[in-house]
Image 1 (cartoon, rainbow, N blue to C red):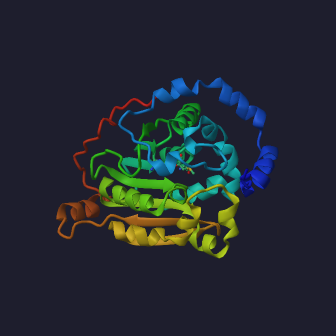
Image 2 (tube, rainbow, N blue to C red):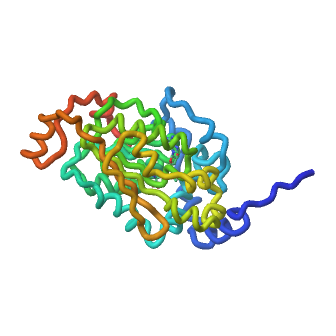
Image 3 (spheres, helix red, strand yellow):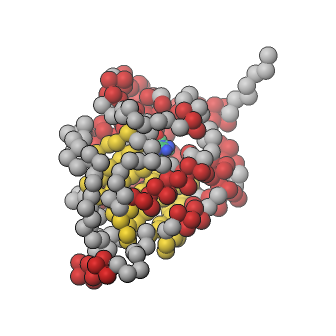
Length: 302
Ligand SMILES: C[S@@+](CC[C@H](N)C(=O)[O-])C[C@H]1O[C@@H](n2cnc3c(N)ncnc32)[C@H](O)[C@@H]1O
């Protein structure tokens, strides 16, 4: 009988992380939550789970994010895989938002909401929505928001097809999402981001540094990440251009991460928007937003 060879994750990293993280505390938290009941508050019947997502293990967790164990251990592990400091790395994305007063911000693949929370703290006047395919990650995110008394709407959904009205967001972000998806999924997520943004709106993608992943192939081998090799071979920059974004720019963040930034161009003859730009120091007009039920959508955290 063939014996499945253990991954590097199973052989080396899992034992190291078990020394670094407070497993008892995680277990206590995990047992304090009725995951099935709480996740029901988020689950939407119309969300189809794609095969790339449901058939793979991520970080050694069977069925990946469709297992509540992922939501429990995610933050404890992520702090050690976002050097030199997780908050500094995420802050680089926040600092790159050039729109002074964004009204609606969407964080795609928000996970446990670490970036989403920082977005709301940086722009308290904005309506901030975190969207994820995993109802368990949303449960964890909602607990964090409740602990910090932060008002965020958590939404179960697929970043490729969110169902939100077009031109209804000023800023769309995704952190640590693209290295976890096949390239064609990243392409559709960026097309969806383009559709969702108002003209002049900004998209920001923070993730692993593709140049480093190509140079240092061992980086792709150490984590149990099914799509990281194809992510490393690609170019978020190029995909953003294909989606229609302009002013696309990728910069290295702390050597192992990268931040790609793009703007949805204004229509050439959009004088109303250009006038607004001049008078209000804002790139936005006030579009009529069909909020797809999000406005006044009471977050389970409040
Ligand atoms: C590595 S985690 C990143 C979470 C969070 N953005 C962060 O920075 O910590 C990737 C997240 O993307 C979510 N995800 C993957 N594919 C998705 C998709 N097509 N639509 C929405 N969420 C997705 C997963 O459920 C998971 O929570």
